[in-house]
Image (tube, rainbow, N blue to C red; front, side, top):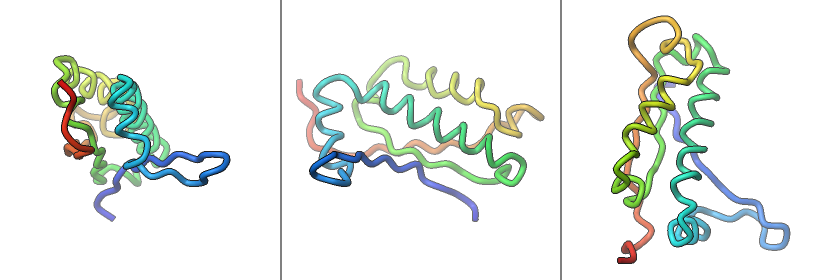
Length: 111
């Protein structure tokens, strides 16, 4: 295995499993996309930390919204998450785990 992707789903009590196309537009409209993305990134890095040295060469992909990419502090928050992660690479060398962020589209951004 060379890489993993952090995926998020929601569990609704009546509707069952909710896919991102259902709840991510709402998260963007309400301003919750930033804390949600931060949580996903930190959780993905924590999981890599739990895998320990077995995960040293694994890339982690996290989909982010265009709104995340337009936030001035977004790159710094990703770097801070990497710096604070307890991954083997971050703890043992100057290299840190590869975190790949790719934009996702949930439709046009409101003005």
